[in-house]
Image 1 (spheres, rainbow over the protein chains, first blue to last red):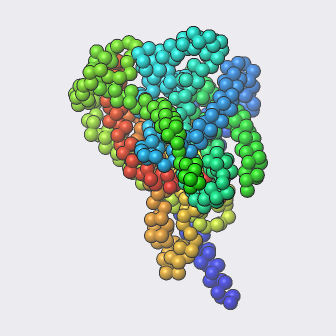
Image 2 (cartoon, rainbow over the protein chains, first blue to last red; image 1 turned 30 degrees about the vertical axis):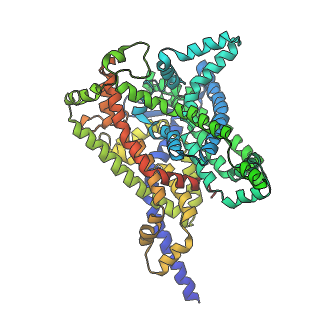
Image 3 (tube, one colour; image 1 turned 135 degrees about the vertical axis):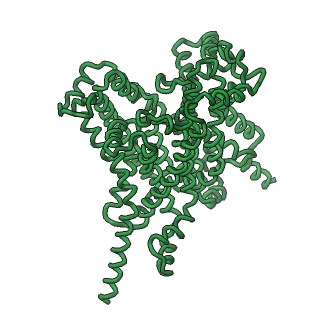
Length: 306
Length: 287
């Protein structure tokens, strides 16, 4: 008996040894290209970094953060802009992609093509190729894509014409401006929905058919079916989509804080410490905010459903 | 009569069909317009490109932009074949290595519960939060210490431990590779590596096809900043920048080159489409 357990333990130990070997190549990579850079970037945030001759840094405590908040009015404004766009685009992207997913999950002819079309932005929305398509403006202004295209559409600034129409309709200027912004933003929003739609559709397909049969027998309408079957069953998928969207929005290239941090280094290579501090402060702020959103979601929804 | 009423309730009305069609077309347009615009511009003759403000559609389509490409490319300092080779070599090699490393790590994280597994998985999820740019300079320091600046390795190595792959793989293995199957493999006398290769890898094919799509997409259009200096080591996007540096007269050809560059990732997507759906289905399952 004791021999047997000892042997089993031996196999366990062997398995663990192999397991460590298996995970090692990936872990070394993670250490070198993620963990070490991460730690040093935290260190940079608290130091005066001199990149002119190799890299040398001097610990200066909270000095970088003090200059950021004290003497740089742009920073606070950018943070505010980033946070408010985070909170407006998050619900819009989430609900838009859920609606798209519901529609794309229906049975109709050409459904595969339709799904492919909505996923297309994910395939080509990276890198240099994308910059050419969107008129080389990525990183300079929020709605570059919308602007470049609306200029091309209809042979003029169609957004301008659109606003002219709106003014003629007698809408107040503020509403017109708001709508205008939204038109330009629609491109950005739709182009950031691809993965979310995919996750939702995939999640809907993994809901067992019996659930829908039961709800049909009970006489639920399609509307009720959505709110009492589909929606709660998607609980974990929504959580995943929520996290993905937050990350995507926080680290987007057209984010004002990101751009400012870029500019620091662009203007003066010695500003790298300030740049790191700007990013870290931003990450802490949005990190806390996302944490609150996630916590609230888990408390309010997931608990009720499970 | 009753059955008919019931039947009616569970199918869509004509208006419903119309609504779906309208809705999908309207928003579908937003996601394809940029691509259609690119294709149209690539077919425009020079006079049409010069029109200001630019028109969306092409009135007299021509292939002269495409025809001009070989001539433009002949003036490159390094032959085009070299860029093509670099792009294909880097994307394919990195994609394969990434899938291998990520699936091995995910297999262990999912199936072997040893100390630190949970901590590592939390780390994986945390790492998903950071994009490459944030860590660019500290990474550069590492590159220079490893002395891999201006080699192929600077493309390949940083991509390998990318955590999205490990995350998707682990979720997929959790939901689709049953422990009993691995146990059966062990009773039949297969070693650890053999179980991984002959039992687990074939089952998780959808997951690695999905990773292949994402990795290929990221690598194909990569243009590293400040880590590659030799022209011989640069990839196809550089050619695109060279062409478009020729100013507005060349923008038609630049668009033509863009269209050509879009073909490989779109092809990879079409091949992997079904698998992507399957993998994403398991991503939302809670650990």
